[in-house]
Length: 308
Image: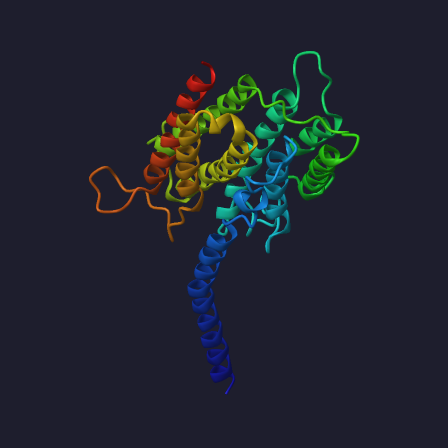
């Protein structure tokens, strides 16, 4: 009798494990696909027929990108328990979020240093504080927690947006100069260059082979970069709408950059494969780098056109 009970418990345990191993990856896969879609759609939130204060579209989109990560079903993952963090098992979204915060903090820096500041103008203090908070360790669990600092940064960006709308205005608006937009695209092309290196390389820096469980880390980190730049490119196009209406060729380049980044941001294979050049298996890192290199080349063209 005891043996039968033990056998029954063992069978139940094996069945539960089988269900977890089957259903778990499916839940994570489709949950991630859903999470990859940002609720804010720039064209709907800031229609062309509505006048906006310069800076509202860009800053609101920046805040919404981070709010979506913090308030999602699983929240901020890189500092969670090992099962959900960037080291073990369900780590795809963790690495994607590490790519997101990297692009957010660099975009926030340019917003503070260039897009809202000319020469001897003072820095917008809310953007200064938000930029500092975005630079906290994304894997820090407590003292301070990453979530707490990033949530405070989002609150400051929200306050910055309200200051743009107030009378009198208490926030520094976007100056909408071409030279400052060029600075942003320079920063983004640098990020895309780094992503290219990680997606295209065939060996680690020490010469060792890239392990299968590391391949997807590079993939999702780069995809996090693309996610941020996709939505912010849309927002920047809205901010520069009047300028781009007079320069349709540049506007078309903006659209092509956004299209390539948008494709990269939602590419979601069930398993990230790393097939060789002549293999029948896909190489998903190479698939992703095609879209990101397309965006980078078009950004170079935008920089050249804006510099004329």
